[in-house]
Image (cartoon, rainbow, N blue to C red; front, side):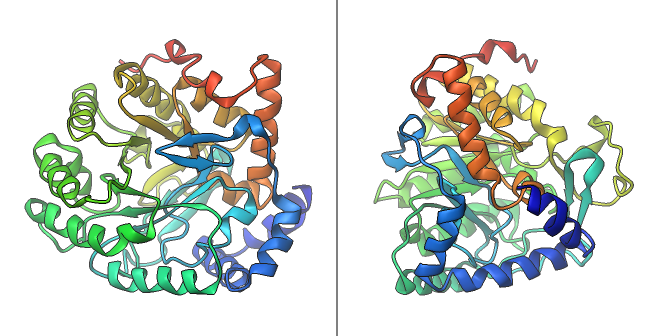
Amino acid sequence: MKFYEKIIRPILFLLDPETAHIFTFKTLAIFDHFAFLNKILAKFFSFSDASLKQKVFGLNFENPIGLAAGLDKKVELTLTWPAFNFGFAEIGSITYQPQVGNARPRLWRLPQDKALLVYYGLSNLGAQNSAKKFIQAKNRFKRKNILAISIAKSNDVAMEEAAEDYAKSFQLLEEHADFVVINLSCPNVKNFCGLQNKILLEPILAKITSLNTKQKPLCLKIGNDLTKSELDDIIFLVKKYNLAGVIATNLAKDKSRFSLKSKDQDKPGALAGQPISTRANEIIAYLYKNSENKFKIIGLGGVFTGEDAYKKIKAGATLVQLATGFIYGGPQSVKNINQDLVKLLQTDKLTHINQAIGLEVNHYHLF
């Protein structure tokens, strides 16, 4: 960890953030092609404890910490993520049509805030090309991790036609996923977050659930800026269509809500990282209080340490994701988080992670 913080990260942070990302992924792609290289990585970064294992969505998770969508948009490291101790990985978001996204630069570090400004605009290979890459990975060697695939609306498709667009991606990609995430919140695409509106969302859920003949677990991914009425509508629809879970939360569109310190805070894009953590926890708690145990919650937003993850679990999250925290924390960060979770459970005199879920839900008051 200190080697990364003292040597590797300073070098990477001299590069433009997207250039650093491309360089890192091209290097790691070598590992994704050879099982024995993954085993070598795992020797350094793996950690397992019975207290962290859970069965969620009918799937066996080795630990509750997952990779959030947004890092592996081009299906590059699907086989390598478990070597970094991730209990699961979410790939995407993937749209039916290939998209180049917004023009560069489109990613900025806010180091004083432990945050990022993200302005990618859903750049990805498209559902058909992504499906081919999942097949190629499957043919290399056996995947060990739980894999989620995030799907989103193509930019050129009208909001009223979103259901058909999501459906085409779902039909191409669902066989490659252990569960599917319907991303409703990309703040960097005009009007995209409007899909969280009940009138536009219901046709999407009706269409995908009608196609989900294999009963693949389905989750919604929601934003950090939602109102009480919007959350209530989402809870209603999640229950109505018997969805498996909600991921809370994606990036924050409204940066004015936060007192940022870093020099690039005025750049375009939505905010990821530590500043959005409190609001995410409040939304998690609100969902948990109103879920009636009908769906699970995956906590996301500002997870850098075991304590950050534990707060989300105590607010009501069964699973937790990170992306920005992995960029800042490096390859050993997930192992450290899982080790810290075990220590925190022992401090609270709990024997299993499930006992902590919702333990402090009443500490959070969103409205």
